[in-house]
Length: 158
Image (cartoon, rainbow, N blue to C red):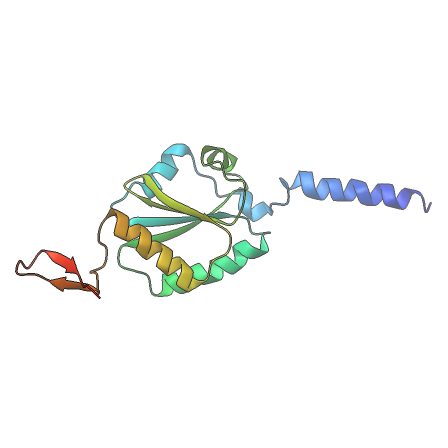
């Protein structure tokens, strides 16, 4: 009887891992995106931050807390979406996601940048600002000085 316990434990562990899609909870499997629906999500004039992760991932859950703080006071024109990789394996393959949490920033359907791993709210805001500066203005640059032309802005020299 004692010799069957390790075998039974191994069988139960295998069922738990493989039966739930590699550690995915059942609630994660329900939200799936096709290529078309994902493209509609990110094909906007706004900046769209997409966090890929899993509900069973500790760093992903901590990152969600940071993203919720940003959602409470978002930069103008930013949308934030979280997508579970459980049930979205096609997207994981498309974007070659091998580590989570993974954040990607999109505008007009184009990926502007990505980051793997946990980040604090301040780090995420800084990253968004840096990516936004590369592709256009969502916010007015507070470090810019107006020139003679109302529409032209020049950086301050220090």
